[in-house]
Length: 299
Image (tube, rainbow, N blue to C red):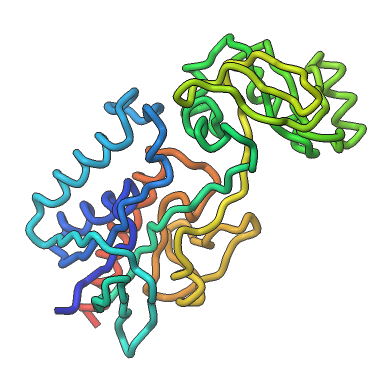
């Protein structure tokens, strides 16, 4: 059976694309490995009707609703190979299965790269956080640290300052913040604390204090930090998709990649990472694939 579309990634973006296509009476396959990037985040926020719900509960309800459409098939597996074969795309999985589809949606997400600080990974998504719109309200007016040592330090501090006025910049080493930004931080009275971080002391992911290598301790409720990412798969490379200037899969306003017939949605395409954003891009990708299929069928 050749599917109208194969969606790689069955989290918010992938399921949203599947729903749009299922409601368009398209035969759709969703392949998902079951490891969403926010799996240890206790609650998801800033997504209307689901504010405060757990990510797992949102995904479970979405999957339940999507699978009510009889033309949608869900496979728990890991896609490891993708290639264009004639007028279709073939996706091979870790278990050895091979599927064929007219279109592909890469909703594969990303893998955040943890700093090698004891306690960092355990607090990630809970009290070591990247997005104030997703998590800032829960730590409002608390003692906040910003782990940064770059020319983006001042703008990052200005952003977080909307949620708390008790902010400290942690450089995790000798200060490398450019003098111009350092002057702005001092002018706005953002303390800059130098020194390597030894560990984050926490209780079940709830940050209590930062321990520095020189023995100092600093009580904090949360730390904001931006971490680098890796793609969850290299399928975009195998298919020849271009990346944008920020290292994400390059898409246009219709979620189309640089490769005809290949769409992408969710965290792999943008730094604006949220459940709401992923859902919106997935929905758009699904609708536009249906539109493209209709056009091709009329030719």
